[in-house]
Image (cartoon, rainbow, N blue to C red; front, side, top):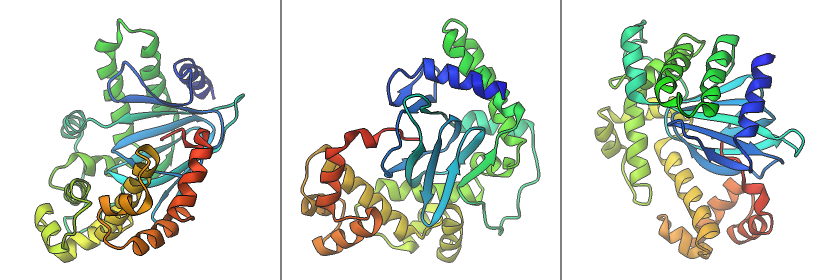
Length: 302
C-alpha cells in the first residue's frame, strides 16, 4: 500500500534514534524501536496510535490488543497499559505515530457533524479500541506527516490536516467512541473525570462513594460504567497506577522496594511485593535488576 510506504519513509527520516521523538507539529509524536522490547507499564492518554511498520501488543487488564501496519488504536481516556514491541529489527524497525486528541477541536467538529448518541443509561464502549485503517484515514495521516518536511507551511496547514484526521475517525467504525470523548456530559466523560481524580490521588485511600460524587454519578452507576470503559474497577485501576509508579521510582530514583511501596501508598511491604510480582512476573528487586541490566528493552512507548 503506497500510503504505508510513504509513512514508513517519513517516520524513519524523522526518528534518528529509538524511543519517542516529539515533532514540531503540536500533539504529534513519532515512535521508533529497532528491536522487540520488554513489557513495560505506561499510561496511555487520549490519542490515536497508527502503526506504519512492525507490531506491538498492549494489555489492558485481561484484554490483549495487537496493532500492526494499517491498524490504529483509539485511546478514549487515560488508561494504565502494559505494552511492548513484539516485531522489530534494525532493518525493519517498529515505526508508529501518536497523535493526541485536542478536546476543543474534536468538540467543534462534533457540533458540525452531529450524530445520534447512545441512551443515557447505556454502557459506554471500552476506552481502548482497535480498528483497520482505511485509505481515507491513511491519506489524512500521510498529509499530516508530510508537513514535517514543510516547517514553513506546518503552522498554517497542520490544523487543517488535524481536522481531516479527526473527521475520518468520527466517520469511521468507532465514530461513536470519538463522540463520547468529546461530549462532556457523556458517561465516558464522567468516567474520565473519575480517572483523572484517581490519577491525582492514587497514593491515598478513597471510597467509591466519594469518587462517584466527584464524577457526578451514583456509586452503582460509576462502578458499572468505570469497568465498561477501563476493564477494571476503580480500586484495581488505582493499584495499577501505584505499581507502575513504584517500578518507575525504583528504576529512575534507585529506591528500594520497601521505600517505593510506601511512597505509592502501601503500608505492607509483603502485600506490595506480592501484588508487584503478580503484575510484573517477578519480585521487585529481581525485576528491576533485570531491567537495569538490559536498558535497551525499555524503548518505545506507544
